[in-house]
Length: 91
Image (cartoon, rainbow, N blue to C red):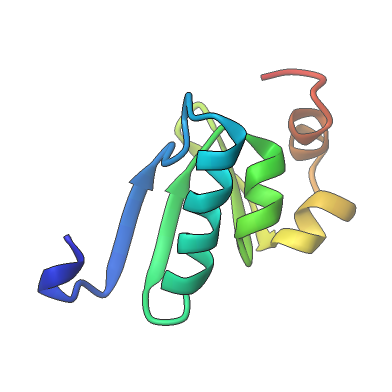
C-alpha cells in the first residue's frame, strides 16, 4: 500500500491478536511511518492508543464524543463518557 505513496494510512486494529513482541514491532514501524504519513488507527486497545498516537478521537455509537491530543484525552478528558471508556467502566 505504501508503494503508491498515499497521504493517509488507514489501519483497523493493526496489532490485533498479536503477541507482545510482534505488537512492539508494529508500534515501532508506526512510529517511523508517522514521520511521513498521516495514520488513522481504529483500536479498542487503550494502552496502544496512548503509546502510538498524537491525537485521539473517542467515538460511541457512530458519533464523535471527544477529540483532542492523546495526552489530554488520557489525563484530563472533557467528557464523562470518554473518561468512563478509557478507565474501563464501560466498553
